[in-house]
Every structure is written in structure tokens, then in C-alpha cells.
Image: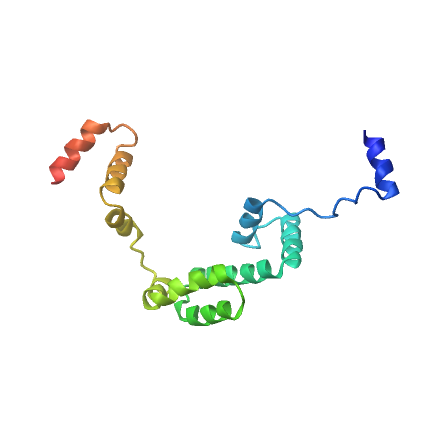
Length: 157
């Protein structure tokens, strides 16, 4: 079977396989979302090849990493410039994100600039009783059953 395939390949009746096959989307996403300094050299090379093969992906990676830098460096003042850079490129998927950020830009700039986080409170307030029940369950480290949860919840009310 292999020799038959090679014979057909030599005759040119079967096109040669491409020298490079793109990675699976989940793997590529991991490479994009990971700090480039943490990637292995082989992964860095594959991401470089992937970005060279698709200019839109290359622009998307640049913008994603730019936003990540704003978040890590807590530079909310750089957000308007980042939004303008994204809008210059023809990337509808990122335009949708920037439109949402621009609608509430003052709050996003404050969130990117502040060292304080209200994440714990936000999770409890937004999700309501479901999050509270899970929080109480976790507080019991798996030992709490529904009767204990009901008791604690009733005592609170």
C-alpha cells in the first residue's frame, strides 16, 4: 500500500502533502493567550508560521497581546489608543469587543487602572443565591449537606 502511494506520488498523480499543517484551534489559542516568553521554542516557531500564513490572525494576536499588556501593567490611560488601533484593522470580531468596551469606557479605564478588585463581591451579587449556595458548600469543604445549607441560609434571613 505504501509503495503504491509512493509510486503515484512520484508520477505526480497524487499531490504532495503540504509541508506544514496548521495546528488545532485549541492549541493555537493556547499559544496566542500565553505569554510569548513562556512558550517553548518549537511552539514559538509554529505560532510564527501560523501568523505568517494569516495576516488577520497576526493582527488579532498583536491586539490581544496589546490589551493583555494594558491589563498587566494597569495602564487604563492606554485604552483609547488601543481601541483606535483595533478599529483601523478590518477585524469585525474585535470591533464588536471594542464597541462594548467603548460603551462603558470610563468604567473599563478605572478597572484597568485600579489596584483594587471587587471580583468576590461581584460574583455573589450578580449570580444571586446560586453562587451563595456554592460558596457555602465550599466553606464546608465538601462536608456540608443540603440540610446544613438550608439551616445556614435560613439563619441568615
